[in-house]
Length: 163
Image 1 (tube, rainbow, N blue to C red):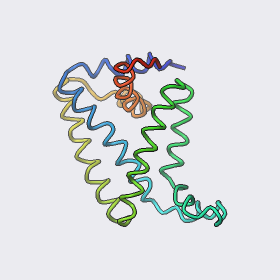
Image 2 (cartoon, rainbow, N blue to C red):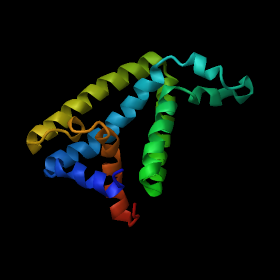
Image 3 (cartoon, rainbow, N blue to C red):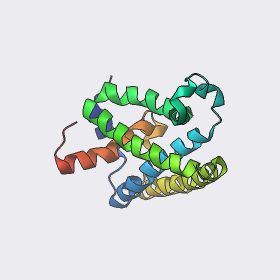
């Protein structure tokens, strides 16, 4: 199994161009947010029947987005505890935002998520065209999970957190 440093170094190989990096710092978290929004939008009524009604509003948070987060959380936890904590903190903020958008209606959430998701991916591919290298996930799909960690690693370096 690769270490977090190995994953980040390999990801960085196709993210050297300054413009591509800037695009990624915006587009990667945006894609993550909108992916969670799309997953939240998938009907999950039967999942919510698993939890007792006494939990009330907490039942709303058992959906495909939170299941995805739990599974990907295991991936990050196996790589690095500090990265796991940072990613789960970032995801918690994103899920809070998604929850508030969902209050406007699932149709609003899905339409916003899909349209912004598509635009963010267009910018990602523009960045890689500028870079002159293919996106890392063409080599290994796990790089789709490394992209957000790569963005977080820059914040960690700035504030002196080792991962």
